[in-house]
Image 1 (spheres, one colour):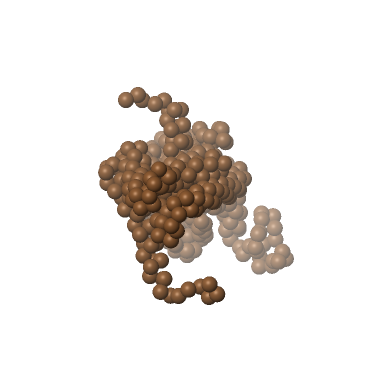
Image 2 (image 1 turned 45 degrees about the horizontal axis):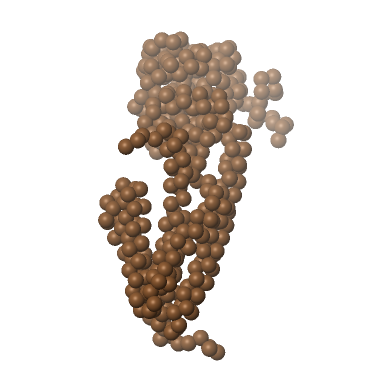
Length: 175
Length: 242
């Protein structure tokens, strides 16, 4: 799996967004930061919690000048129906049908032939600044991803469990 | 041929689920009693003694097999039900794990992922329907998995007696031990063949003659193997103190 400091692999993939099929490329995303998260499948009972979670917190990410992109191996039309099933999503779902992008990020589960539950935060140079992956049965914390985005955007060292408003710098009084 | 309604078909399946006890009981009753009769025919000169010993063996065998089937089925059912209760409690706490597994099981059976999702979503509106479907599709448990201990115990015992009567009746009707033994062994072979012929060949869909021969060979093979093992260990000596 790619790690902080690595360049994010470029992509230009079909996607579903706003009940339409279109294309999204990494070059075309203008926001300061990008949250790119992989998940195994559309039409699943585990994935929606985080797919919907990112949708609900999208305004907060937007406030941090951060775009969200979801990626799975499902095709764009399936993404469109899935997004509609979930009541609409405020960010695009990319169709990585052959798993090439997931493999480029090192986030492809060859045994199950699906993308892993992996999330990457890219900075304004599209370098990876945060990478996390979890078991296929465990959903990620969307709030934690937002916290990390906020911490990264301070541009300064943040102690463990830092929250907006907490003291910045290396001092850590919690532990 | 009349087509059965699904409800009638279900009752047929429930009855057929007890075939194991019937076949097991008959086969054991036939062979045990034939063995007792053959063994005693050489050792005891009185015909009535042979018959009495075989009757005692039949009663003991039927009770033992019936009790064994009852206890075995009861233990199996209790353990399965207890595990199922645990699985249901876990599923109530984390329904999405069960839903996802059921979705995967349906998709493996040919439904598209989207169709599987919708089926599971519909089932989820009635938890009992979700659980019972998941139990069958994920855990492989069906209604026939849970036996009736009393019925299976009774069936096993009755089947044992029915099997035991096969070699025993010729002994009762023939006046000489030798004729009774020959007729009993012939009847034993005929019944063993018939069980295979009708159960696997007729009720099942295997070639009937082949099924009959297979059943006869396996059952008699086991009896002959037991006899040969007895012959082989005989030279090892006698029991100390006897």
